[in-house]
Length: 163
Image 1 (tube, rainbow, N blue to C red):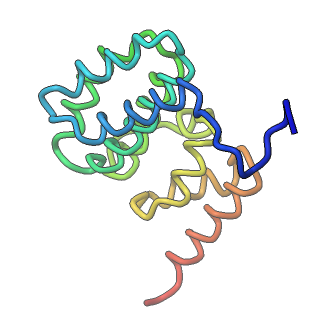
Image 2: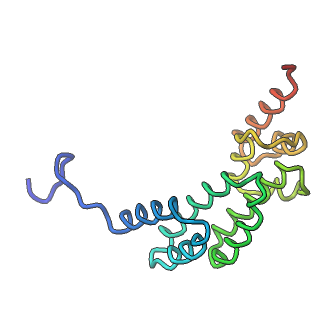
Image 3: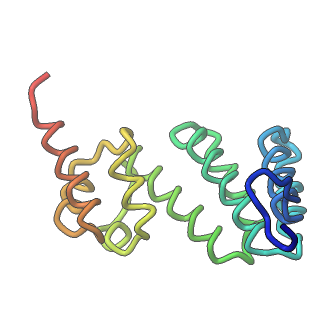
């Protein structure tokens, strides 16, 4: 058959997919001292959607690793300067910081929580580090999706059960 592809025929992976894989691999292996420079280099790629995706995946991984530790604040500050031109990445880092505040019992507001993205609300109800019953109650009552409200309610029920 000419002009049609079948599953058996080899296909060439698109260039942006190859760059995404290379960027992801480099970001996983980057030394802390070189991280901001590498993130900035990735964000200079002409395919901004792909670059934001690669850096977003990296931010999620690093933020989760550093979330409750002392290095998070300096790391977040360094990343803020690099990602400032990306609304998506800026929001994602802001929401990781909010998650940290809730997890550590630091200040947050009901407005912060109720106006946060669906991603944040799902993350807050599925991570076991959210120790704030107030945050869980708020999400159980006013979460953006039914899924979030149910997950928060379940966490509250689980917390209330004797061990």
